[in-house]
Length: 66
Image 1: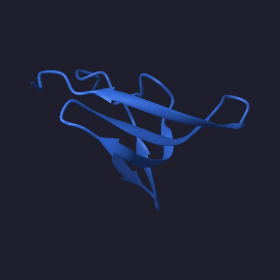
Image 2 (image 1 turned 30 degrees about the vertical axis):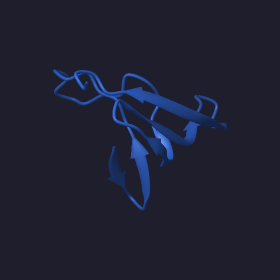
Image 3 (image 1 turned 60 degrees about the vertical axis):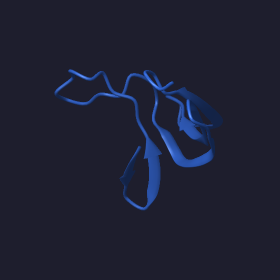
């Protein structure tokens, strides 16, 4: 999760991509809703190709955590 401008954004990249192109649309105004030992839930909005905003939640599983 990175900070761009004045609103937090969550982005998922391919680890070996030198240009750091997002694999899925960026999550704008990302907020951490909850976090456990093995994952976290983010809430925010995604902007569609037509410019419309959609409310989204990302459920992220932390791999390699027991």
